[in-house]
Image (cartoon, helix red, strand yellow):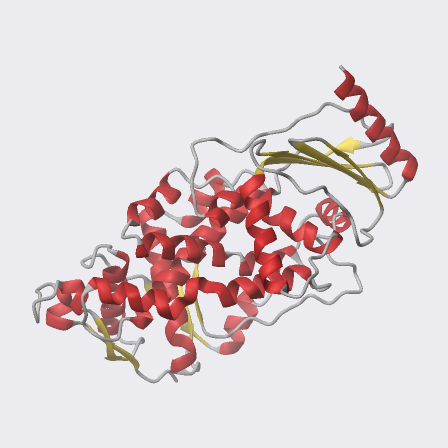
Length: 404
């Protein structure tokens, strides 16, 4: 069974100031049992204080389950459609059948976006479950503000890139505010608390390094990248919190943020992602799926496989590439076609910022299939397939379009 967590709130949930501080500056983590309704209300109010939310709002519903039930619900991820797997496999973004990518999740606590409640493993160690509960409460509060995360994501997540960035923003913001709430163990002025948050969280660099390490591994599975990408949302929320600019985080939800590139570079723009569309003809027998946009995060993951970073300081070089890709990416179009036998053909076109100097694209490691590249100062087109002849036909068609 869960033992008590540490959590108290000064002066009746912080509704009156004490010690000359503002009410939420007095909010700290005291002792209570999260199975108790009053504790859940206090946890909710404490997180709301850190987020700058409504302390008087109703807390989320809690459900306490066994470890076995928790793992049965959440310890697997849905697979994409078969044609999607084939196309992602050609780009090294989906593992070979013989590669084991499965990862066990931590059996602690989470916000269930479908049930819209905080789900907690009843037998979890209090130290292991404390931060996950706080993160889940922060996500539950944003879920209410959105009118339901699932519906919001369905409305705005119209491409893979958009869906990825909405997930990263929503879960990453919850990461940050849950972590910040856990750090608020003493009454102190907001300025001092901000300094401590900056010092303790270290701009989420350890979590960011874990993302890079996973991106370069042969166990790579984009579904598990999505579990790590919220670090971009956490860094975005942290930056705005330290700048005392919560409106910038709120704006990312109300607009909402348009691409993983925007979130990674922590700067929203008024320019929507470009939709490059150089015309070409498919070889006979091939049919095109609906075009998609994979985004800067997936392009970075692709590069980590086909052109791995080398050098003495790998962490620095990978971080530099990560932000470089996000900085110059302006948009992409991912076309996946298949013939009657199901053989995939990829045409992946990118638009880049013409004001940013580009490094030449290079494949230093063999990717699945055969690839050819068309490149100029502001764009890049990658064509991949399992037949030299088929790839050459598409390249010739694209080159004919350039001549028009």
